Length: 361
Image (cartoon, rainbow, N blue to C red; front, top):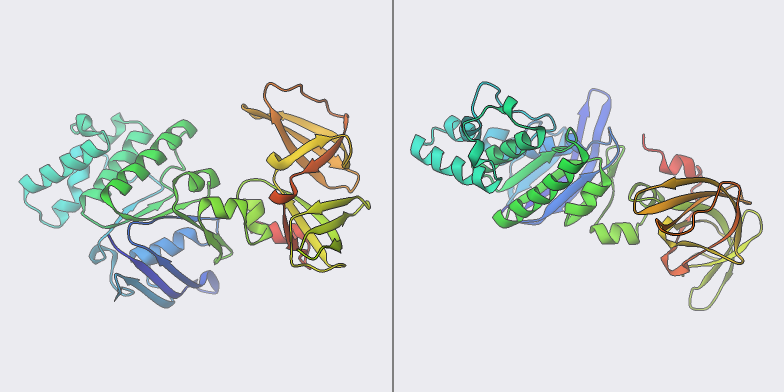
């Protein structure tokens, strides 16, 4: 297993700053996902860590050793690409052995190692086939076996499932996590799919515009995000502009919405008169006999539940969920909404506005 440390990593392409001033520590055996919108610098960052690109500024350390200027072939890193990069003229077995052959590993040892990893990914029975004879998910398993057979203790996964069907992606991500945990590898996994990140990670690194926005466990980053951008990007949330109108001694907070409706929210450090934004996820919003008055605009079936989209008198759109077997309301129905105040989060209202704060680019 290997520990990774980044210190002040910046990567520029001409006048374009792809990543800026990144500091990061990844523990041995940790499965870390780098998540964020397209163009935020995710792939650039792992290519710097892997040694494909030398950073403009900063240092990369592996197990305490400075490897900043060490090329990828000497950095002991396995890399699985977004586009399935198998050699079409080679059999599955030959593809799995490729890295070993380049390093002049004897044929008998190559065969033993590749067989072990093909068996690990359940592809040994297809060892004599060619890539074109396999499905996309099977090809990516072979690419994983090839990366693992190199003996590397660090594995880089660059959007490895983005080209696969949804069901295949779901199965493969669980297989990958199980395999790398069994082998004790340190993993950096790039994705723009928040569900994928939530389901496999020990920690998530959320990036935006070349910088790290937030780092945390999937549970912490979902339940207690530190920024409005995180709350909106990880999962789904309702964002309501409010003003603090009352505080108790223990921090309990009451806010007023834009139409004058008063709502009790989570404890906060804000003072009376402060402009704030309250975040509350759809699963914590309910209908009641009194509360925030709203009109239902859309009803969408999501499989295991219905998503109800309403427009409140505040002109905010507020969404909530009901079970799939509940009575389904209709567009145009009026409702009163309340939410679990303990599940709400209070943020300072950004000066540039909510839309700019959550913008992806």
